[in-house]
Image (cartoon, rainbow, N blue to C red; front, top):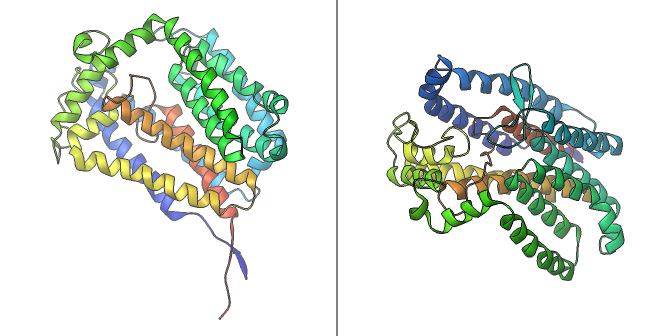
Length: 368
């Protein structure tokens, strides 16, 4: 007898635990800075709660919707159109830290690139599964990747080098899963290395970040300040941490302790054990996601879930690597945990789609 397998409860539990850790750390890291800047202790927490409420509504809709909407070509192309619209609109709003990444509506900020990454995975899953036989035809592949190149161009213009790299990685992973020959990967890498070198060369800010990454002590008071303070936080946590709320680095020493460098505060307050637990949750997320992908009904959903899981996990790897000094500083949030409504909303959307795929799976039960 064939039955629907139902929602993957392990993945759901992992997502809820990560969200709970996120709110605990936002409360811990923002009360002082919120009081200093906004006159109240719960400014950041209240904004995150607002996006959580919105995100849970969208999440429940995505999980419980009976039709596999992500297989609808018109909907996928509409999402791509919205993604390009959002990425274009950011240039009409005031810059923040010399970047154009946000759209501001009614006092709230949205980062279109977070949703654009989801739209891109939906697009690639649809096109690569449809044109599986043409994946190694360079002309067809080039046409298929034109929207990817256009999106990368808009994100680079913001500029947002972290998401530029992230989108490139997701695209390469999905091409590999779809069956692109290794010799074409070699060509891509041969083109990619000089491109990245050029992008670093033309940007003094990127050059400074690379130099400070390679020689952090020499730039501890300038471009390497964030990285050094982050490693201090990680190192001071020890095995069991200083205790929730007892971080000293969050007290105006470590910039963006509630968002880009929240993992450093997790390590400081919860210690090696707490940091390892967070990493373990993302590993479980990856493992359950790959199981759902392998058990999906068709190549389309297999590619889709693989791309979405990679998006969450690789983003978490980038954020954690920056926090512990293994990667140059980039403004990549930690999924589910970092303060930032758009990041939380996009993480819930991704998980909602994956769990909907898990509901659509069919498993065979043998009658005794």
